[in-house]
Length: 201
Image (cartoon, rainbow, N blue to C red; front, side, top):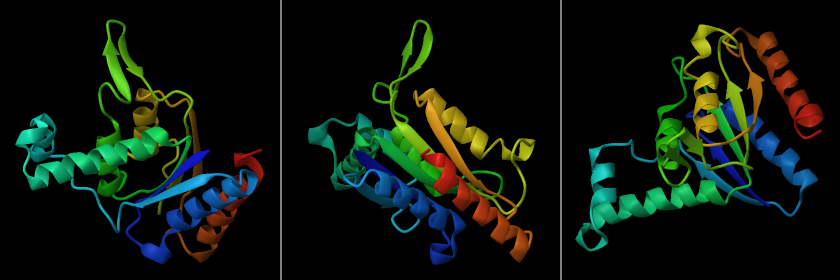
């Protein structure tokens, strides 16, 4: 069993999503102790943002790539292979300005690859990542669940992972974290309860 643990918060030890994503991984490995965990910190080791240079590197024959293009292609392939080889993916996804962190979007741009994680057919797009479990730790300062303001966050992730074929997608939610100490503590406690009592029941 392979688990890929992704964090994207820029807040370090002060991050609620990091705390909760770590708790998810600990709970999973307690149940499945032979799990091999791979950790990627997108804030401390960010991927470059998707650009024309990214496409140019991929489109250049191997023998014609310069050093920066070789590094770009190798990094992208390693990132994609990490995702493809994982049976379970745990993602810490805080909300920044009504969307996911740009670091997480850069990672998504590396795993949504035609012919690898999805393909187009005469019947329309087909996801190729069936059988993979994805757990998203969703943290927000305000209240956005089920509201239009959540469209660029949880709803976006549902669309992305649904598009590439992930049907086992679960969310651990802690929202209203900026509403004061008591609401924050209550939201974190509820999320921890979800992890310990519900997530792997």
